[in-house]
Length: 51
Length: 228
Image 1 (cartoon, rainbow over the protein chains, first blue to last red):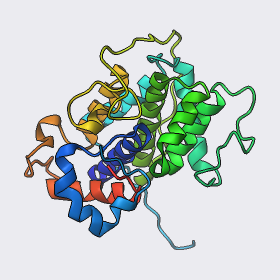
Image 2: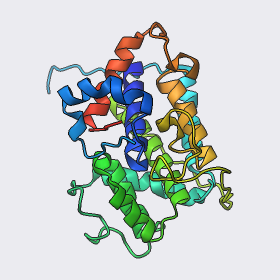
Image 3: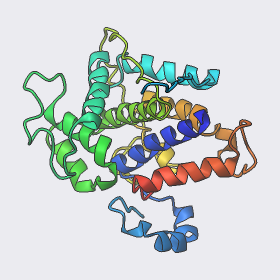
């Protein structure tokens, strides 16, 4: 439970850092994640940033 | 309720994680690169006020609602940024960032503000999830910010200035060296050590395995509607 809370805490941090700084998806992730992003509706998120 | 026995247990927190959290709390009260210790503590306090407040829609700022008193230690754009990052980070856009900078928040000061807000969100999430009180704030350490610019940091791939190269989210705070170091240390204690980050899908602390760790990470990220 403690380690699960720690991981969750870490991604409360990292998501805020990514969203508030305009962090783009890494070039190496764009193509491999395309199908998954489409299936899960992630491409419609307001913070979508691909260079 | 009569006849009900309640039992409170204090979870056992491993030493490296407790030490990492204690270090972050202490750093909140110390002069940073662009903010004093008192201002950094005010940023944490404002994050807590934002999360406890009746929710505002993303497009409504606390300053527009009269929620920033004239004698606040932080400027109105700083408070507006904190509330947006605290409660609606997934709706942040380039226009929002540009407007904050146009209102007088320097890009470098903004990066440090993001670092403090993000670490505070992490620690408060952790304690709340375990039913513990939030970490108390330390007394501020007197002193002035260093105002140290990081060589080579430019606004190019991100909205904010960054030192180019590497995984982009790990570079996001690179314009403020101390903030980036705090982020790195905290990630190693809460998530994974750097050497396990790429490619080692068997790494474990002996509790969660790597796939369980990544499931929690992905679930948290999608609940926050984080595209990255």
